[in-house]
Length: 333
Image 1 (cartoon, one colour):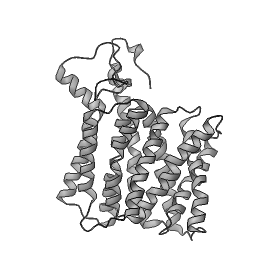
Image 2: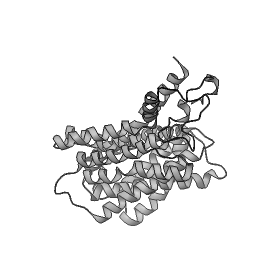
Image 3: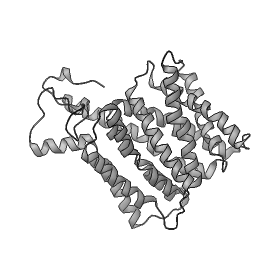
Image 4: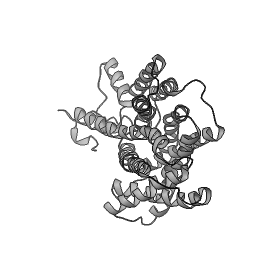
């Protein structure tokens, strides 16, 4: 297998692992509505973050040093504390389809923030794929007669904005520890931010039965620990455009779970929406656009060209996928 094929395979496997995160998050809508105590979004967010962050930290111990105290606190607030609180508020106050449609704007927001902070210029294909995917999400999940709660809408957009900034900072800042410990820091920091707010706003914890415990275990282990580890791994290894687009699998997973477990309707509009979402994800991938352009041009990039680097053409391959005449110069994963 050539170095190009090897790097392409690694790119694909990394993206496939990152896709597990939005799939897990998408299934969380059903779990939240079905198993967790009603009208306690801050309590739910705190339980999802703090205990599981401490558990992960016990498995992979390590404490922040120097600037990483405030960096971990900021990332934990953006990616976990504020995001969890806002997304739980949106889940409780909006129909699942409306919340999913609003959060489908996240790929575009991530691309714009990455462009400003990292000089990762999004290609037109990536922006177009994100727009097509958002339209597909609307067809997939919106239902007639859905109510629009202003607080829920604001919570959804707030969650998208804050998490987009946090995700790009994860990509920009390289921690001195492994990814599990890095994720644990953020979960603990976010949970500590949420805990006093939850107690002040919602009062003492509500009664928790076996169904709620099972729901929290799923959300904590699968929808939080596993999801954030693979998501952060993807962000650190791939362009922001590539990873953010697979986030559109969130409403796809929510729809599949809703149809399978809650008996939700699935007709022609939903089928078209599913096709648009998956098509937008695929067409918007920088690597796909680069392959198409190379095939149309009938030529390979010049030796040593760092496509995907700042200033590279729109839709270029990630830097790790660059074909060169000297395999030793290809970036390693």
